[in-house]
Length: 157
Length: 157
DNA sequence: CTAGTAGCTCCAGTAACTGGAGGTTCAAGA
DNA sequence: TCTTGAACCTCCAGTTACTGGAGCTACTAG
Image 1 (cartoon, each protein chain N blue to C red):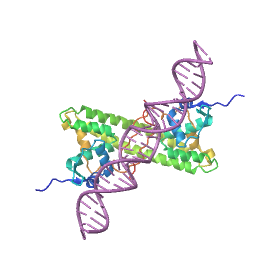
Image 2: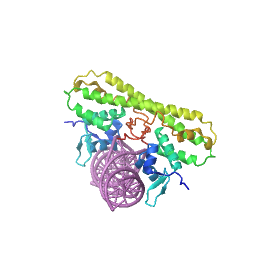
Image 3: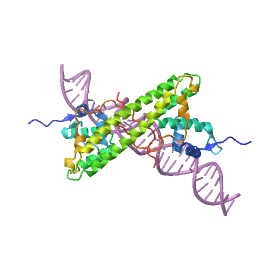
Image 4: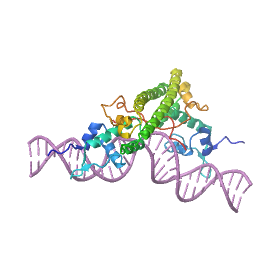
């Protein structure tokens, strides 16, 4: 008989756009189940692993934390349960995204203003430095420190 | 004679809104100079330290990395040098902020669309889960992974 | 003198990976 | 069958920008 399709980790990596180390990391923290191994101890994945990893990656791209994803995955294990909680998690995520956009926009405004004032002289006269040194009772930015996470990992080479 | 004003670390912390540990951390990584010490080995800061720390904090709030701040601080040490580089650093920062806003906006769009499709049934029918599981050739989000840093530290308390 | 707060150093932990060392396995070609 | 080289393995350390705790010492008010 033909065996079902199994993938070595590199192939799974290619198909999902997720680095090999990251896949192993997800396994380590229990987000991905342990796959079958060859007699030589190499991992072999099946399509279900690929689906799960795709789910994780897409969720990460949408900015969900690994903890949120863990919860979402837990919920999907019980298909009869109400999807209220899923909705909650996504809604919370949306809220955070909105907050971050708001903060970044304020930040942009200040950066733009700062740059506009620079006339390109000596550092001693530099408005950018001046603005940065200025610590007036904190502009719009100082309050509400929230989630620092963003979609995607660090730059990959 | 009256001594010049010196602050213990807790007072500096209060005045700048920067945690005690964070101040010590900045010293450890060479961003803040080593302050004077009492005979009992406690740190005592002067107004110049406060200015420098304020500069660092404000820059952090604007999303500059510690490395960028280190560079900016280095540049301010030479007041006769052209402020072109300062401008460059700020401009790079602005660029990154713009990119992050763009990405977050795309993200928001997708989250909103996802949530709108949820009619609140069972998880088996949940559109949110479906969308997350879907790994079409990657929407607008998969490209351009950049700086993960955001204004402010993690939530404090 | 004592109590309590604030300070000290050192170490470990956070999120979400990434990279490398040093060794093994697999698959294809000779 | 042997060899070669890519891909795999585990384990560990590093990244960013802090944060928290243990266990100890200094300072200051009463």
